[in-house]
Image (cartoon, rainbow, N blue to C red):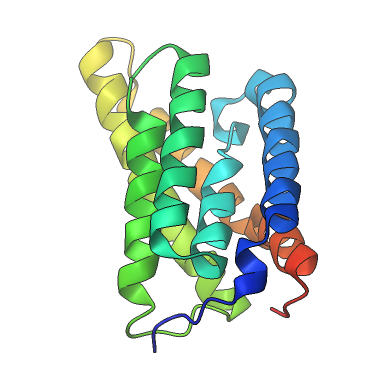
Length: 172
């Protein structure tokens, strides 16, 4: 069943609140999460956010949102250009494709779907790290770190998506 978009999801006040929430998550990720010593704890907080907006907003608006914020994060990261844009756009497109067959308003489905996207993101990151410095990339330890990163993203997904639904007034 395709998603039904309401006009309240497109109000400028709602988009502004989600924009401020996105800036807050970006600040937390860049100032706090990116400084964690073990790389496994450096999760991408905006991936679950893109999933939450993809459920609530029309596809074109969400693709623009994902591309814009992905560009910002790619600019801030300085390496692997296109990583965030690509992973956010793929996640948004997958949400719009999957909603044809599944009900994604279930918290469990949301967590599993974001986990699958985070796993794909980790696989792309692992491939980049392997091609960038194959001698330094310890295969078992690094891949385990990427799996832990995906699992932690699954765990924080409800905490990140809930405010998007709460601001709009919908229920999970």
